[in-house]
Amino acid sequence: MPNPTTKSGFVALVGRPNVGKSTLLNALVGAKVAIVTPVPQTTRNRILGIVHRPDGQVIFMDTPGIHKPLSRLNEQMMSFVRQALEERDLAVLIVDASTRFGKGDEFAIQLLKQYAPKTILALNKIDIIKKPQLLPLMDRYAKLHDFEEIIPISALRGEGLEELMEAIVARLPEGPQYFPPDVYTDQPERFLASEIIREKVIGHTKQELPFVTAVLVEAFEESETLTRIQANILVERDSQRPIILGSGGQRIKQIGTEARVELEKLFPPKVFLELLVRVEPHWRDNRAIVAELDYRGDAPR
Ligand code: GDP
Ligand code: MG
Image (cartoon, rainbow, N blue to C red; front, side, top):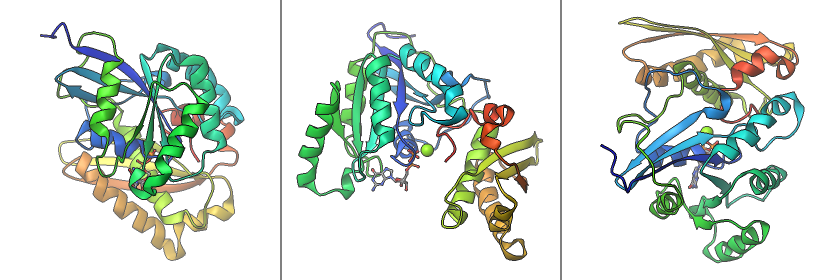
């Protein structure tokens, strides 16, 4: 059983949307996030992925809302953002080295300064920046905060990941293996389903809908032969409905087909997917909806 010299701990993974958190987790966990029995979790205790190594076990935890201080969504989230950070052994802040440092990053660093005991900075996407830009960039970040370490990585190419993991494990306490080695995540299936659908919606509409879309899974029924999923795509105005539907319903059909193909990999052998577009003005202010969306890694855009 647990080797007494093994380290283990809970690590807050912090980063704006699109910085590469999912890519990094998939690369580190080494498998597209596997599904285990869904365990209800509170938002501040959501596990994103678990990395099992000979020298330790690293449990990456989500910290939703950390980049967005405004609106009720975040008001609700702020208290567990603080608490979540305080309960972690370490935080890893991921930034996209190829884009400008923004307000969201600044706000996150402020929270980390206040509530996270130790933070490692991972500068991601170094494969697409010019080499001479790297040192000045590391310098700039070093001035912003007393990071434990600043590690350039490319989650996509797998560069710097061993260095990152070593830096993480080195800062964790000795501890037990909290999870058996075949467990990678405990994200509920409904959440994974809604994320896949949302990804397809965004993929097809981002030019025309540079605003919020949310996906709520209304029904999720599994049998031996079929998983039936019914989901609502929420938009805020009537005029946004046809954008999702497309002419003659072509677009939503396409979204549904693409989502179903991916969902069937997670829920074999067959998925029956039903998508509806629901107009829900001000859904972001609706507490019931926001509560359900709490399972989301990134606050809805
Ligand atoms: P998340 O929103 O933080 O989870 O970000 P994703 O993992 O979904 O990545 C957002 C986009 O950045 C995707 O198109 C990824 O392929 C891309 N990406 C992630 N990591 C890297 C990287 O190291 N290099 C490059 N060039 N692109 C990356
Ligand atoms: Mg992601």
